[in-house]
Amino acid sequence: MTDHDEMAMKAAPRGALAKIEQILKQADSDDNGDISLGALSDAMEERAFGLLMLLLALPCCLPFVYLLPQIVALPMVFLAAQMAQGRRAPWLPETLRRRRMPVKGLLEVTARTKRYAGWLERLAHPRLAGLTGDGGLRVLGAVLIVPCLSILLPLPLTNTVPGIGVAIAAAGVIERDGIFVVLGVLIGLLWVLMLAIGGPALLYFLIEWLKMRFAAG
Image (tube, rainbow, N blue to C red):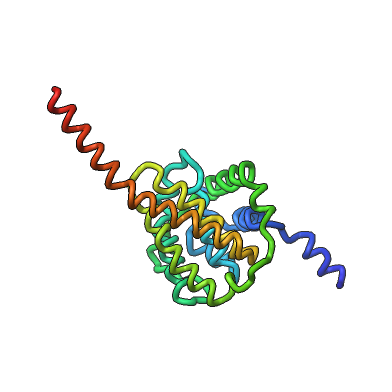
């Protein structure tokens, strides 16, 4: 190994979140400190699917983060659908490529995630490689469409749990960890199932409660 190779290895960040931080810090932002989704995707090169999906899922994972989840939800659905199609690199329509996000806000979200969940990321390492191969990624993309769509619902807490599931699965793709992929999928799908079962019951309860309130008034 040459000295240049050793320096490159030392300079390369370890862990998915550290890689995202490096990309954000090196990215060219505009005068307002914003960066387009297209520029981010281009900067991530061959790692774009996993890194971009993780980056977009992070704002959905943390409670009391506003605006960003609404910005990132639709691109997440597009990315999952393209993974299911077997694309090697993401393609986004020009309207989504022009969508801008605050670099400072993304860095803050990444830092908060590292502070509270950095220990989880350190557990990831290559295993069950077949689940992160070409065939596995196509299945994963098809399955992730479901939790990604649930993030679009304008209801309280509908983005946090599926966002965590998508983030864990994306980290599994980046680190080639099939266990993380399976864990992320299970979290996302189980939450959607609970929402589908409990959502109508909650709505019925609210309607009946409102009827009683109006009747009492």
